[in-house]
Image (tube, rainbow, N blue to C red; front, side, top):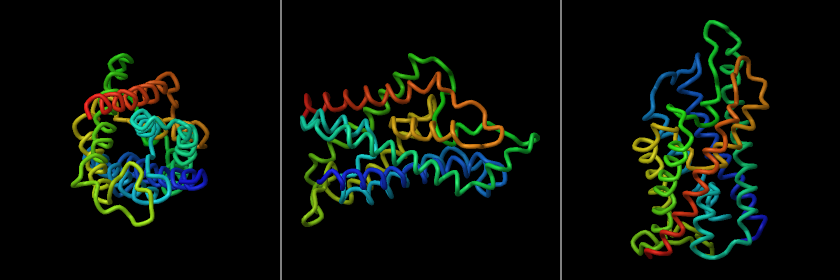
Length: 253
């Protein structure tokens, strides 16, 4: 894969991921949304479908990592580190673009946040936050949840039943076939339902940091704080989890 393909694939794929993910959070959270208060299950499936759409789109170009933690896990497994910075920068750019697009989709609802009677903090639409703020416990949650994402992704590539059917003439990257991307999307739904309660399951530094930057910059009325004091947790936890997943995979497989 060329550097240009990697950049385009990761930017487009991550932008789609965040558009769907931040979009479903906005749909459930904001007043005057037809999906308001639809609940956690809807959010978990919305993020899972975001992974599905983003990874399918990006896979022919870049392998469809869409997540620095996945990129680190793959690098530990393969020993190929030269393109890691390109992947991570591309994912951050895509996450920022996706967050802006989600804002534009719900522009009228965000502007309606100037009504004091219904105004609400909006950071949860863009980024994660803990239900109980205990940084050590929050980091451990993110590490474990990210291992639960990255280790199966690496294992999918070793499973002969999943790894068949590559696109002719294309590098399938970390995904052996289309079915593996579907499985990853369902995996993300499962993580959200099972492990997302304590911290909101960032499991992806770009997914959290890029939209948090956008939240800080956007002119949303009464938007509340961007909570930079917590922002290191959904970055450090998934990065450690991705590295651990790569090490565990190398040791076990």
